[in-house]
Length: 253
Ligand code: G
Ligand code: G
Ligand code: MN
Ligand code: NA
Image 1 (spheres, helix red, strand yellow):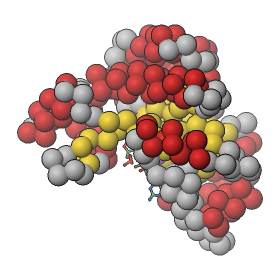
Image 2 (cartoon, protein in one colour):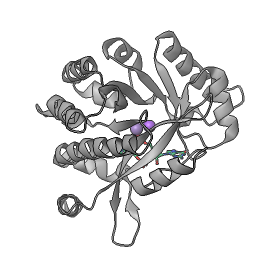
Image 3 (cartoon, protein in one colour):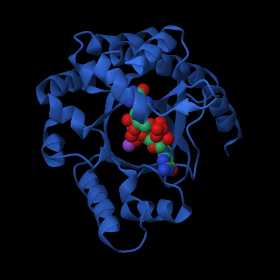
Image 4 (cartoon, rainbow, N blue to C red):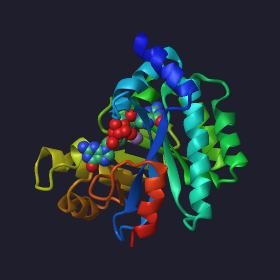
Protein backbone atom coordinates (compact mmCIF):
# COMPACT_ATOMS: atom_id res chain seq x y z
CA UNK A 1 0.00 0.00 0.00
CA UNK A 2 2.93 2.32 0.68
CA UNK A 3 4.05 1.94 -2.89
CA UNK A 4 0.64 2.84 -4.29
CA UNK A 5 0.51 5.96 -2.11
CA UNK A 6 3.98 6.94 -3.30
CA UNK A 7 2.98 6.37 -6.92
CA UNK A 8 -0.14 8.50 -6.47
CA UNK A 9 1.78 11.41 -4.96
CA UNK A 10 4.67 11.17 -7.45
CA UNK A 11 2.17 11.18 -10.31
CA UNK A 12 0.38 14.18 -8.79
CA UNK A 13 3.74 15.94 -8.55
CA UNK A 14 4.38 15.16 -12.24
CA UNK A 15 7.36 12.97 -11.48
CA UNK A 16 6.45 10.16 -13.87
CA UNK A 17 8.33 10.27 -17.16
CA UNK A 18 7.39 9.09 -20.61
CA UNK A 19 10.27 7.55 -22.56
CA UNK A 20 10.33 6.48 -26.17
CA UNK A 21 11.78 3.50 -28.02
CA UNK A 22 12.21 3.94 -31.79
CA UNK A 23 10.69 1.46 -34.23
CA UNK A 24 12.27 0.83 -37.64
CA UNK A 25 11.27 -0.42 -41.06
CA UNK A 26 13.25 -3.69 -41.46
CA UNK A 27 13.79 -3.20 -45.21
CA UNK A 28 15.48 0.22 -45.15
CA UNK A 29 15.89 0.78 -41.39
CA UNK A 30 14.06 4.12 -41.56
CA UNK A 31 12.54 5.17 -38.24
CA UNK A 32 8.77 4.81 -38.55
CA UNK A 33 7.70 5.65 -35.04
CA UNK A 34 8.22 4.90 -31.38
CA UNK A 35 6.61 3.17 -28.43
CA UNK A 36 5.90 5.35 -25.40
CA UNK A 37 7.01 3.67 -22.16
CA UNK A 38 6.38 4.90 -18.62
CA UNK A 39 9.27 5.43 -16.23
CA UNK A 40 8.98 5.99 -12.46
CA UNK A 41 12.13 7.54 -10.94
CA UNK A 42 13.14 6.18 -7.52
CA UNK A 43 15.03 7.99 -4.78
CA UNK A 44 18.45 6.70 -5.84
CA UNK A 45 18.52 8.01 -9.39
CA UNK A 46 17.24 4.73 -10.79
CA UNK A 47 13.83 3.70 -12.04
CA UNK A 48 11.14 1.35 -10.84
CA UNK A 49 10.18 -0.96 -13.70
CA UNK A 50 6.72 -0.53 -15.23
CA UNK A 51 6.46 -4.32 -14.98
CA UNK A 52 6.30 -3.64 -11.20
CA UNK A 53 4.27 -0.44 -10.95
CA UNK A 54 1.84 -0.72 -13.87
CA UNK A 55 0.08 -3.68 -12.18
CA UNK A 56 -0.15 -1.56 -8.99
CA UNK A 57 -1.57 1.33 -11.00
CA UNK A 58 -4.11 -1.04 -12.54
CA UNK A 59 -5.10 -2.58 -9.22
CA UNK A 60 -5.50 0.81 -7.53
CA UNK A 61 -7.32 2.45 -10.43
CA UNK A 62 -4.56 5.03 -10.78
CA UNK A 63 -3.97 3.78 -14.32
CA UNK A 64 -7.05 5.72 -15.46
CA UNK A 65 -5.44 9.08 -14.68
CA UNK A 66 -1.92 7.97 -15.50
CA UNK A 67 -3.09 6.47 -18.80
CA UNK A 68 -4.92 9.68 -19.70
CA UNK A 69 -1.73 11.62 -19.04
CA UNK A 70 0.30 9.15 -21.15
CA UNK A 71 -2.04 9.60 -24.12
CA UNK A 72 -2.02 13.37 -23.81
CA UNK A 73 1.76 13.57 -23.36
CA UNK A 74 2.49 11.12 -26.20
CA UNK A 75 0.30 13.19 -28.57
CA UNK A 76 1.89 16.46 -27.47
CA UNK A 77 5.38 15.10 -28.03
CA UNK A 78 4.44 13.52 -31.35
CA UNK A 79 3.15 16.87 -32.58
CA UNK A 80 6.38 18.48 -31.51
CA UNK A 81 8.34 15.89 -33.56
CA UNK A 82 6.10 16.55 -36.55
CA UNK A 83 6.99 20.25 -36.27
CA UNK A 84 10.69 19.45 -35.91
CA UNK A 85 10.81 17.86 -39.35
CA UNK A 86 9.57 14.30 -38.75
CA UNK A 87 6.00 14.65 -40.03
CA UNK A 88 5.36 10.94 -40.67
CA UNK A 89 6.33 9.45 -37.31
CA UNK A 90 3.70 7.59 -35.30
CA UNK A 91 3.52 6.84 -31.60
CA UNK A 92 2.38 3.62 -29.94
CA UNK A 93 0.79 3.79 -26.49
CA UNK A 94 0.15 0.80 -24.19
CA UNK A 95 -3.43 0.55 -22.92
CA UNK A 96 -4.52 -1.40 -19.81
CA UNK A 97 -7.86 -3.10 -19.24
CA UNK A 98 -9.18 -0.65 -16.61
CA UNK A 99 -8.84 2.15 -19.16
CA UNK A 100 -11.38 0.42 -21.39
CA UNK A 101 -13.83 0.22 -18.50
CA UNK A 102 -13.68 4.01 -18.16
CA UNK A 103 -16.68 5.38 -20.07
CA UNK A 104 -14.59 8.41 -21.08
CA UNK A 105 -11.85 6.38 -22.73
CA UNK A 106 -12.89 6.63 -26.38
CA UNK A 107 -13.63 10.35 -26.21
CA UNK A 108 -10.40 10.91 -24.32
CA UNK A 109 -8.38 9.39 -27.15
CA UNK A 110 -10.27 11.36 -29.77
CA UNK A 111 -9.84 14.63 -27.84
CA UNK A 112 -6.10 14.14 -27.48
CA UNK A 113 -5.82 13.69 -31.26
CA UNK A 114 -8.05 16.65 -32.06
CA UNK A 115 -6.46 18.96 -29.51
CA UNK A 116 -2.97 18.25 -30.83
CA UNK A 117 -4.10 18.14 -34.46
CA UNK A 118 -2.69 14.65 -35.07
CA UNK A 119 -3.77 12.39 -37.90
CA UNK A 120 -5.48 9.49 -36.07
CA UNK A 121 -3.55 6.92 -38.12
CA UNK A 122 -0.35 8.14 -36.42
CA UNK A 123 -1.57 6.97 -33.02
CA UNK A 124 -1.34 3.26 -32.33
CA UNK A 125 -2.88 1.62 -29.30
CA UNK A 126 -1.11 -1.48 -27.97
CA UNK A 127 -3.15 -4.03 -26.12
CA UNK A 128 -2.18 -7.45 -24.81
CA UNK A 129 -4.17 -10.63 -25.25
CA UNK A 130 -4.90 -10.71 -21.52
CA UNK A 131 -6.63 -7.34 -21.82
CA UNK A 132 -9.04 -8.72 -24.37
CA UNK A 133 -9.63 -11.91 -22.43
CA UNK A 134 -10.78 -10.01 -19.34
CA UNK A 135 -13.83 -8.39 -20.85
CA UNK A 136 -13.92 -8.93 -24.60
CA UNK A 137 -17.04 -6.98 -25.58
CA UNK A 138 -16.18 -3.65 -24.04
CA UNK A 139 -12.71 -3.82 -25.58
CA UNK A 140 -14.03 -4.84 -29.00
CA UNK A 141 -16.64 -2.04 -28.99
CA UNK A 142 -14.16 0.65 -27.94
CA UNK A 143 -11.54 -0.48 -30.42
CA UNK A 144 -14.07 -0.56 -33.28
CA UNK A 145 -15.07 2.99 -32.54
CA UNK A 146 -11.47 4.15 -32.39
CA UNK A 147 -10.56 2.22 -35.50
CA UNK A 148 -13.44 3.92 -37.34
CA UNK A 149 -11.93 7.23 -36.22
CA UNK A 150 -8.64 6.18 -37.86
CA UNK A 151 -6.56 5.05 -34.89
CA UNK A 152 -4.48 1.89 -35.44
CA UNK A 153 -4.42 -1.12 -33.12
CA UNK A 154 -1.54 -3.46 -32.31
CA UNK A 155 -1.64 -6.65 -30.31
CA UNK A 156 1.36 -6.68 -27.95
CA UNK A 157 3.47 -9.66 -26.84
CA UNK A 158 1.64 -11.74 -29.45
CA UNK A 159 1.70 -15.45 -28.81
CA UNK A 160 2.24 -15.27 -25.05
CA UNK A 161 -1.44 -15.08 -24.03
CA UNK A 162 -4.30 -17.52 -24.39
CA UNK A 163 -6.76 -18.06 -27.25
CA UNK A 164 -4.93 -15.63 -29.48
CA UNK A 165 -6.65 -16.87 -32.60
CA UNK A 166 -10.22 -15.88 -31.74
CA UNK A 167 -9.13 -12.29 -31.06
CA UNK A 168 -7.63 -12.12 -34.51
CA UNK A 169 -11.16 -12.53 -35.81
CA UNK A 170 -12.92 -10.25 -33.36
CA UNK A 171 -10.58 -7.29 -33.05
CA UNK A 172 -10.03 -4.57 -35.69
CA UNK A 173 -6.25 -5.12 -35.68
CA UNK A 174 -3.58 -3.48 -37.79
CA UNK A 175 -0.39 -4.98 -36.38
CA UNK A 176 0.98 -8.02 -34.57
CA UNK A 177 3.91 -7.42 -32.24
CA UNK A 178 5.95 -10.62 -32.19
CA UNK A 179 6.98 -11.16 -28.58
CA UNK A 180 10.70 -10.96 -27.97
CA UNK A 181 10.79 -14.51 -26.59
CA UNK A 182 10.22 -15.71 -30.17
CA UNK A 183 12.91 -13.67 -31.91
CA UNK A 184 15.92 -15.01 -30.00
CA UNK A 185 16.75 -17.91 -32.29
CA UNK A 186 17.96 -17.53 -35.83
CA UNK A 187 18.46 -21.23 -36.54
CA UNK A 188 15.70 -23.74 -37.26
CA UNK A 189 14.03 -24.99 -34.08
CA UNK A 190 10.90 -24.52 -32.00
CA UNK A 191 11.45 -20.82 -31.25
CA UNK A 192 12.24 -19.86 -34.85
CA UNK A 193 9.29 -21.88 -36.17
CA UNK A 194 6.94 -20.02 -33.83
CA UNK A 195 8.31 -16.67 -35.02
CA UNK A 196 7.90 -17.78 -38.64
CA UNK A 197 4.34 -18.96 -38.02
CA UNK A 198 3.33 -15.68 -36.34
CA UNK A 199 4.74 -13.60 -39.19
CA UNK A 200 3.08 -15.82 -41.80
CA UNK A 201 -0.20 -15.64 -39.93
CA UNK A 202 0.03 -11.84 -39.77
CA UNK A 203 0.85 -11.57 -43.46
CA UNK A 204 -1.99 -13.88 -44.47
CA UNK A 205 -4.43 -11.87 -42.38
CA UNK A 206 -3.24 -8.67 -44.03
CA UNK A 207 -1.72 -7.35 -40.79
CA UNK A 208 1.58 -5.58 -40.35
CA UNK A 209 4.12 -7.30 -38.11
CA UNK A 210 6.79 -5.88 -35.84
CA UNK A 211 9.47 -7.90 -34.05
CA UNK A 212 10.18 -6.84 -30.45
CA UNK A 213 13.43 -7.18 -28.56
CA UNK A 214 15.78 -7.27 -31.56
CA UNK A 215 19.29 -7.11 -30.10
CA UNK A 216 21.45 -8.62 -32.82
CA UNK A 217 21.86 -7.94 -36.51
CA UNK A 218 21.26 -11.67 -37.28
CA UNK A 219 17.87 -11.50 -35.58
CA UNK A 220 16.91 -8.51 -37.72
CA UNK A 221 17.93 -10.18 -40.99
CA UNK A 222 16.19 -13.38 -39.94
CA UNK A 223 12.92 -11.59 -39.18
CA UNK A 224 13.19 -9.67 -42.45
CA UNK A 225 13.62 -12.95 -44.33
CA UNK A 226 10.51 -14.30 -42.62
CA UNK A 227 8.57 -11.36 -44.06
CA UNK A 228 8.36 -9.22 -40.94
CA UNK A 229 7.90 -5.48 -41.67
CA UNK A 230 9.34 -3.68 -38.71
CA UNK A 231 11.48 -4.07 -35.61
CA UNK A 232 12.15 -2.54 -32.22
CA UNK A 233 14.98 -3.39 -29.86
CA UNK A 234 18.33 -2.53 -28.34
CA UNK A 235 20.05 -3.11 -31.73
CA UNK A 236 18.51 0.17 -32.89
CA UNK A 237 17.88 2.04 -29.67
CA UNK A 238 16.88 1.65 -26.05
CA UNK A 239 13.90 3.48 -24.63
CA UNK A 240 15.04 7.07 -23.97
CA UNK A 241 13.75 10.41 -22.67
CA UNK A 242 12.15 12.74 -25.24
CA UNK A 243 15.14 15.10 -25.47
CA UNK A 244 17.42 12.16 -26.24
CA UNK A 245 14.95 10.95 -28.85
CA UNK A 246 15.17 14.28 -30.69
CA UNK A 247 18.94 14.04 -30.64
CA UNK A 248 18.79 10.42 -31.82
CA UNK A 249 16.47 11.30 -34.71
CA UNK A 250 18.61 14.29 -35.72
CA UNK A 251 21.70 12.08 -35.99
CA UNK A 252 20.13 8.94 -37.44
CA UNK A 253 21.18 8.69 -41.08
O1 G B 1 10.55 -1.22 -20.54
P1 G B 1 9.59 -1.82 -20.20
O2 G B 1 10.14 -2.30 -18.91
O3 G B 1 9.46 -0.35 -20.37
O4 G B 1 8.02 -1.97 -20.04
C1 G B 1 7.50 -3.07 -19.39
C2 G B 1 6.03 -3.13 -19.63
O5 G B 1 5.34 -2.09 -18.97
C3 G B 1 5.67 -2.98 -21.08
O6 G B 1 5.63 -4.23 -21.65
C4 G B 1 4.31 -2.37 -21.06
O7 G B 1 3.34 -3.38 -21.23
C5 G B 1 4.20 -1.76 -19.69
N1 G B 1 4.06 -0.32 -19.86
C6 G B 1 5.01 0.59 -20.11
N2 G B 1 4.50 1.81 -20.26
C7 G B 1 3.16 1.67 -20.13
C8 G B 1 2.04 2.58 -20.19
O8 G B 1 2.16 3.77 -20.46
N3 G B 1 0.81 2.05 -19.97
C9 G B 1 0.61 0.72 -19.71
N4 G B 1 -0.62 0.29 -19.50
N5 G B 1 1.62 -0.16 -19.65
C10 G B 1 2.88 0.31 -19.86
O1 G C 1 5.62 -5.33 -22.98
P1 G C 1 6.08 -4.31 -23.91
O2 G C 1 6.47 -5.02 -25.17
O3 G C 1 5.18 -3.18 -24.18
O4 G C 1 7.41 -3.63 -23.39
C1 G C 1 8.53 -3.48 -24.08
C2 G C 1 9.62 -3.82 -23.10
O5 G C 1 10.70 -4.45 -23.75
C3 G C 1 10.16 -2.60 -22.42
O6 G C 1 10.36 -2.96 -21.10
C4 G C 1 11.51 -2.40 -23.08
O7 G C 1 12.42 -1.74 -22.25
C5 G C 1 11.92 -3.81 -23.38
N1 G C 1 12.81 -3.95 -24.51
C6 G C 1 12.81 -3.20 -25.62
N2 G C 1 13.78 -3.62 -26.49
C7 G C 1 14.39 -4.66 -25.91
C8 G C 1 15.47 -5.52 -26.30
O8 G C 1 16.03 -5.43 -27.39
N3 G C 1 15.81 -6.49 -25.43
C9 G C 1 15.21 -6.66 -24.22
N4 G C 1 15.66 -7.63 -23.44
N5 G C 1 14.20 -5.87 -23.82
C10 G C 1 13.79 -4.88 -24.64
MN1 MN D 1 4.14 -2.63 -25.72
NA1 NA E 1 5.76 -6.52 -25.75
